[in-house]
Amino acid sequence: MLKSVFTAVLLATIATISPAFAEDMKMMRSISLSGHGEVHASPDLAIVSMGVLSSAATAREALDANTKAMTDLMAVLKAATIASKDISTSNFTVAPRYDYGQNNGQPPKVTGYDVSNTVSVTVRKLDAIGGLLDKAVSSGSNQINGITFSIADPQAAMDEARKEAVKDAKHKADLYAAATSVSVGNLISLSEGSVYQPPQPMMMRTKAMASDAGAVPIAQGEQVIAIDVSITWEIK
Image 1: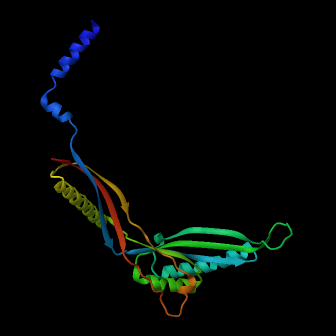
Image 2: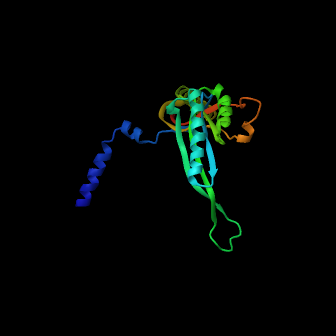
């Protein structure tokens, strides 16, 4: 009896489903594609890692020598109108140096101490980098670990890359639709994937910079800002 009642209710419910609702229940036909957009732009700032490594018989002597050299380096940065907010200490270490020679199983001997002090410097006038590096080395900096170029405000370039990514995806959608005799309908969904702005590193050696030719030659190149999107359209 109970089973018969349940069956009757179920049949009555199915009978009340409208044709429009039944049509909506069908799986919507769609096409999903990804798009890639890139914009090339010239960098307008650089981040330089520079500092001083000092060695001496005692930690005190090494620290004193390092402090003097870093003071001279800071004076060079100040003279180059580098703002205080653009200079930050990135590394400071005091470490012993060991002699790992033939000690017949004995612990290594401490032969001196090394003090390293490194600052990260943001340079906003790219045409001044070469001269700044030359003066930094002349003032006593013996550690230039690298240069990374970047764009201070990449928003405009990112927006242009977004437009290019959407155009790329739509181009593919239209191509596939034409090839399969359908047409692209309304947009169903859009999501942004990776935003890729690779820094442009330039590793440098102090020896190469300490030349008599004057300012260090620097090539800044171009930045590539890339964005990926995923878009789904209805197909008719």
